[in-house]
Length: 338
Image 1 (cartoon, rainbow, N blue to C red):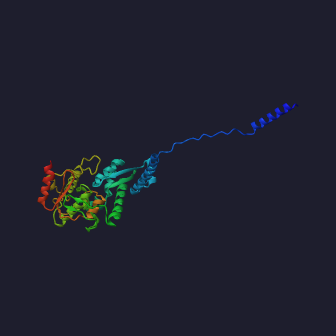
Image 2 (cartoon, rainbow, N blue to C red; image 1 turned 135 degrees about the horizontal axis):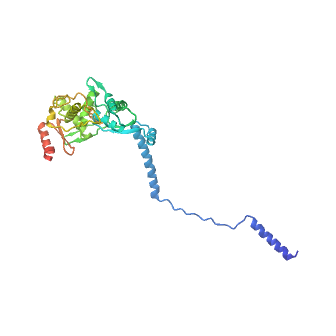
Image 3 (cartoon, rainbow, N blue to C red; image 1 turned 90 degrees about the vertical axis):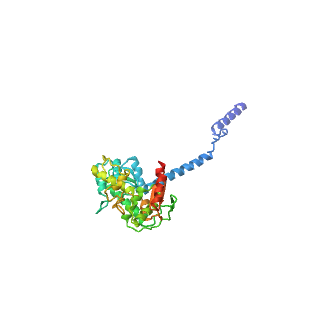
């Protein structure tokens, strides 16, 4: 073999080793540039996380207050077997029964079952112990089931929040320009039944929480002075009860009774133990189901010398010590504003 061919063979061999050696020319990797997340998006994401967390926490706390297990609540959302019924303060038990009847599709037998589960004594079935508020009830609940649930709630909340300690639900406030309420302490000693009767009147007469303790003070002032209460709310109760008995449709879905009718002059002569224009002292039973704040106000009347009061057309409260001054308020805030 010639020297030239040998050199050529060696050169080819070297090239072959280079091709199969696995060594390749260096390839530079391309860096992918990502844009930084704007600061406002980072802040927004934090707030969204906190918002969802607070919402879940708040919802859970609210559910516990309603007496419903959160797991049960969220399960119910997927397969509803409970209903939420909100009962406002100041309703008669007949009105309360009808509210549940509408949501739960009760027949008359279940309405009667609800009404007949009320506390009873020699005065008959008692109003005042169905504590207002939101209630989760099973769609299959009977009238007796719901009534007992409400009565248990009354006993629990009143014992825990009122009877066991000073109630702090009322705040210092002014009523009209006459009276300033003091801090809440138990000032009026009475049994619970008396407090509920007073509270039911307060609930119906007050235009809001601010008025409650002042109205309580007026009620006790009139009682201690031997005056009749002259409360229109008791006349409304007497008037509606009289009409309900005439119709013979006690809390029936077909009843046309207006449960809180407007009071006119002749109503002051209705022959009823609930007519506080004709009968001194408290009515024989509560006239409505009061809130915890109204019950607390019954125990804690504001110090006031007022004996008369009115609400103006803007729900403002005005009270006076004398009937003459009271008549001036009527002329100024009611008659003169027509």
